[in-house]
Structures are given as structure tokens and as C-alpha cells.
Amino acid sequence: MILFLLAYLGGVLTIVSPCILPVLPFVFARADRPFVSSGLPLLLGMAATFAAVATLAAVGGGWAVEANEYGRLAALALLALFGVTLLFPALADRMTRPLVALGARLSQSADGRERAGGGTVWPSLLLGVATGLLWAPCAGPVLGLILTGAALQGASVGTSLLLLAYAAGAATSLALALLVGGRVFAAMKRSLGVGEWVRRGLGAAVLVAVAVIGLGLDTGFLTRVSAAGTASLEQGLLDRLHPGADRPVAMTGGQPGGALPVEDEMPPLTGAVAWLNSPPLTAEGLRGKVVLVDFWTYSCINCLRSIPYVRAWAEKYKDQGLVVIGVHAPEFAFEQKIDNVKKAVADLGIAYPVAIDNDYAIWRAFGNEYWPAHYFIDARGRIRHHHFGEGEYDESERVIQQLLAEAGRTSVSDRLVAVQATGAQAAADMADTQSPETYIGFARAENFVSPGGSVRAAPHVYAAGTPGLNQWGLSGDWTVNGEHAELNAPGGGIVYRFHARDLHLVLGPAAEAAPIRFRITIDGKPPGDSHGADTDADGQGTVTSQRLYQLVRQSGAVTDRTFEIRFLDPGVQAYAFTFG
Image (cartoon, rainbow, N blue to C red; front, side, top):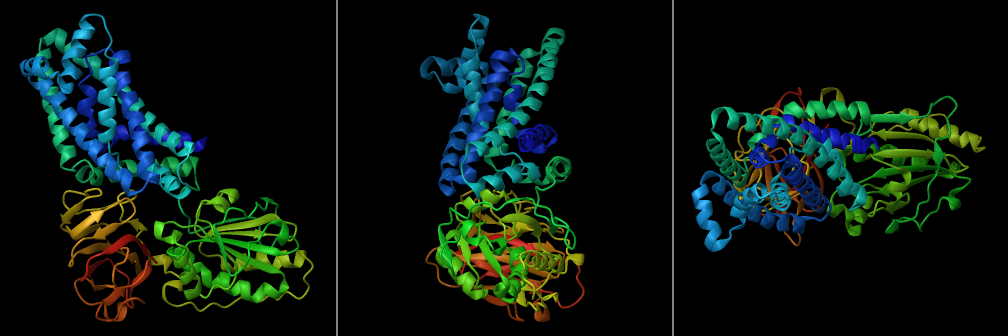
């Protein structure tokens, strides 16, 4: 229920975001009509269409986005006709006689029905559907939470209802604005007699809005302008009403060192599409064992930095009754490929059982929301402790020792493991990390500064722009999809202004692509001693598989730096930056 309230309030806040500006002319073009028969159907059509399209885009992949592009073009044409009929009523009359144009019907026939006492519901509803196809709200924390959940857990009635709640919130604030605007419009007509000029002004505004949306400015400049304003308001809502919405650095439950409470019964482990290093395990078959369940995915830097500890615990305590189970729940589509997971498990030296949870069956059974997430289960099958995120490894190991002692193991060592991890698995320098995880696909992208903004699901030649701290841009010929951006021609690159010791980028070759060569620079120079595990001192490297690549590990003082990666071959897919 809290998520639905958050979604609704997040939608209400869109009225103060510049991202709503392009659709306002379509809404206020009906301000002089009765709200119930004109304004309300428009807003209902807009909300329902946005929820339907956003659901498909979140869970349906690229084909849904492509299909919507055709719908956007049709909607642009329809609304352009609508604007012309408002701007030139005489032209609308000529259009309606020979062609019965749809745009003219939306205005002229609606006026005729209203004067005759009829309704304007269907023309307004159709106008709302067209507006919903074009509306691209800024993806702040609330909408990002909804879309991330949809992408992870697949299509569901809940996903559509959350998106509908968000759209209903936006429609509510627009309805209030429309009611006020209608009174203002009526007062102007009574007092000044300028109704026709107001109508033409609205027609011009509609045509300007069509041009803004058609040029992509609604998702480019306006998104950047509004990001700082509404994101802080939305984040405040999340912090107050849903404190677990963001992936934490560390979040624990229970009382390590004291009496550990019983949090819940261990859920079943059914629904995995495959098991590695073990036959399928069951909750019943694990009774009498202490169990650590680790939710992870192999391109997640937080997971990679936790694995050396999980691996060490599994080895140290396996003969004393501990069973470690890694539940691999994919974040990106390529992590659903079992062969990719098998390779990652081998590369990471994981010998304990791994359940491949591509359908999120185990994830949902635990009610989990995080990578990594550790659940500690006693010999009686009860969850006694949990820890979300990185860190607090000593406390987690003490919990393992305590649960083993409760299970009657008398020879449990009270010493703690000593981990010496290297490469991407080495501990982060969180005290001096100021750059956040940053997604490149348009579904969750933020702080994108290439001029003109992102062009969705279509080839486009970008210029990198001049990013400020935690901003980034593309250069060259790219196709930006919901989950990743793919390079269409050699020589393209990505620029990011960051502040952290380490910089990682999730990359992969497109299907059947050959290895892709790249070169990185830091502040325009080769990295030298600040190169990462996947680059050399000259900044050269090769993308050979779909995984996380460590590109920078600074050897000196950590300051704001400008990172650039340029690909010498086409076909790379770029997913997300992470830092540490």
C-alpha cells in the first residue's frame, strides 16, 4: 500500500517539473470546456495510455519501444492537426468538409456537439490517448523504483497498477490546474472578448509542443533542468515512506553478539531454472544445517566485493555444518544466460551451490529487494539475521559462529577470516566515493548531457558535450535502448566526470560480435599507474564477454576526473557505470 501511495505522490509532483511542460498545451486546449465531459476524459485517456505503454516498455524489451515509436509519430500528426484547427478555424472548416479530418473533428465537431447539448467525451478521450503516447516524464527516484521493480520481476498487475497510480497522481495535479485555468479562460472571454485570440494562442502552443516533442527536447534539456528540483522532493518521500527503496551500503537485522530474534521461516527454494555445483536443494532437506543465502548477480560491483568473504566462510565452516547458497538473480538480460553465469562462477572460484533464479521465484519468496543480500538461517529453518549491501563482514561471521554454536557445534573457531581481494573484488574506498551508479539505457539513465538529449531506440550521432561532476555523454553513432546503448560505428565513445578511486563499466559485445578494442584516458591522458585490472598503462583493453570491467583504479589522490573511453570497433553494448 505504501508503494501505491508513493507512486501517486510522485505523480502529483510532476506538476512542478519542467518535463510536464510539453503536454500542458494539449491539456489547456480544453480548459474552456466542461471538466466532466471534456477535461476528465482527456486526463483519463492520458493516464491509462501512459500506464499501458510504460508497462510494455519496462518488461517487453526493445520491440515494445519500437512499436511505441510508431504510436508517437501517429500521435504527433494527430495533435499537430488539432493545433492547426485551433489556430485557423477557417482552415478547419475546409478540412472537415472534404476529408472529415480527425484533428478537425477533435475541435470543430466537439464544439458543435457542445452547442447542441451533446457530449465531448470521445474526442477528448482520443486526445488524451494521443497525449499519453507522447508524455515522457522525468525518471526521478519514485518512477525509477517502479520501473526497476517491473524490469526485475516481470509483467504483473501490480506493475501496471503502480504505473497507473503514478499517472493518476499526475492527472490529479493537472486536473486542479485545468479547473483553475478554465475559470481564468472563462473570465478572459467575458471581460475582454478575446476568446478567439486565446484559442489561436493555444493552437500555437500545441504546435510548439509538438515540435518540442518531435525534436526530443522533452527528454533532453527539460529532463536535465528538472532533475535537481523534483528528485530531492521524491527522494524525501522515499526516505519517509519507503526507507528500503534504494540499495544501501549496509543494512542489518538482528543483534549480532546478543540474542538473535526469529525474523521468519525460511521460504522454499523452488523455482530456480538451474542449479550449479549441486543438485537442487530444499528448505526441508537443509534442516539441521546453518544456511547462508546470498542473493547476487555477476555484474554487480557490490556483489563482487562481497563474494571473497562469502567464499571464505563457505570454505572455513563447511565441515562444521554451514551451507552457503548463492542465488543468482539477474539485473541485465545477458545475466539470464546460464553459460554466462557458469563462466562467472568458474572465474570467481565459487564452489558452493548456486541457484539460477531467472524468474525471481526465490527472490520473491524471500521478499528480497537488494544485491547483495545475505540471509542467515538456523538449524531449525528460521531466518535469524539479514544483511543488505556491502560491509560489516566481521558481524556477519559472528552470526554464523553463533548459529553454529546454537546447533551444537562445539569446535567452532572464534577467529575471523582474513580476505586479500584483488581487482574488482577489492574493497571500495567508500570514504572518498562521490559518484553514484549510473545507467546508460534510457529506462534508468540520469545526468545525460549530450546536446539534444537521448534518442530512443534509433541510431543517432551524438556529441559528448561538457559534463560536470557525475554527468556523462555519448559521442559517435549509438542506438540507446532501454537497458543499454549499442555502438553502430567505430570511433564512438563515452565521457564521464567522476570522483572515486575506482571506475567500472558493464560492457559486452553484441550477439556474434568479435572482440572490441578500446582505449581510455583520464583528463585526456593515458592512465599510467591508475589503470584498472582490465586496462594497461596506455589505457588499452578489449571487450571479450558481457561482464563488469574495471577500467580505473587511481594510484594517487582522489579528485574530480574526466574519464573517456573510445571504442576502436563497433558493436559494443554499454550498460552501467559503478564506482568505489
